Structure formats: C-alpha cells, structure tokens
Length: 215
Figure 1 (spheres, rainbow, N blue to C red):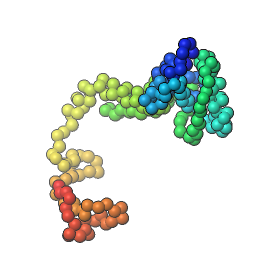
Figure 2: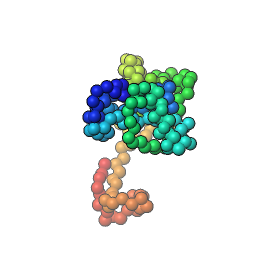
Figure 3: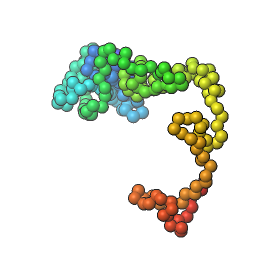
Figure 4: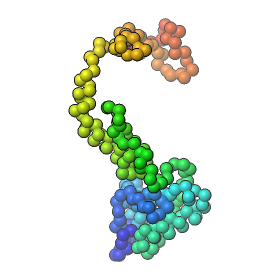
C-alpha cells in the first residue's frame, strides 16, 4: 500500500510486514494479512488483505457503514490506496472484546518488579510498550524475565537463608501450622473408566476394581 507503481497483478504489492497502530483512525491496530501471514492469507493474483480492529464507537453502525468508514480512513492514512479497488469485505462484531486505550492510563499500570521481595508481575495489564494485547503480554514477559535476571544475586541470597526441611515437613514455627507428615502410603484403585457421578470414596470402591497405580 506504499506504492501503486508498476505491474502488481501478482498480488505482491509492497507494504509493511508488521502489526501497526494509529492514533489518527478509529481502528486501534491494523495489519496487511497478505504480508504478515502469507501462508494463511496471501492469494496469488490478489493484493492486500487489511484487517482493522475498531473500537466501540463503530459497534452500533451497519456493516456497510463500518466498511465504508474503514476504507475512508485507510485512504486517509495511505493516500496511494485510493488507486486500488476493494473487492471483498467482512465485518465481525465482538462486544467488549478489547479495551479502549485512553490517554493518561499508563500511570496506573504496575511495573514488573514489585516492593515485595522475589515477587514479580507479568501480563498485558502491566506497564509495557504496547496496548493490552497478546503482543503486550509477550513484551511484559520479557521485561519480567529481565527484572528477575537483574535481581538473581539477591534472590539467591534470600534463598540461602531458608532452612533445609525434612521431606514432607513444614517448619513448626509457621503460625497456625504444625508438622505435616506426608510419608503415609496411599493406594488408589480405579476400574479404568471415568464417571463424573461415581463414588470417589476409596473405601467404597469394589474389591474387584483393578489397581492402575500405587504410590
């Protein structure tokens, strides 16, 4: 969509192979799927396949109006696209499927590092470069990993202070908790089938039921 010069009949028009964002259109993000996901969406002899995600302002409009509004805004963002012809369109409405970004909200997003030692956050809701999205979640995971790595020495020092506990025990000084012995052997039997309504009390299971596992 950056150029309409030359013979583009093979469908491989030049463009931007990426997910894009704009503050100048009603769609918060958009992409040319023929470029970003050619294995699924590129068809020989055809051109761009634009996917545009609009916010709640468009929800009450007719599908025909949404298509026209989208096309007008694509022409506004990419003037050269006015020389192209739209051959197909489709509208999918999913109510409350996305958050609408509002200016000034980033200050409410928590960082990946927290005031609690050895406690970190990851998720698209945390502070990162993108909107609340899969890409934002991925970015936050990378940033969270960076925070953990940067504090690796402090985490190791804290871990060294912990007492080595006998297997299956909890320290007796934990408030409200006493020693816990997990050494008792338990045998589970099942007849090999699953029934959500069957009796799960092992003492009531028939003696003929074969043991499928023991530990």
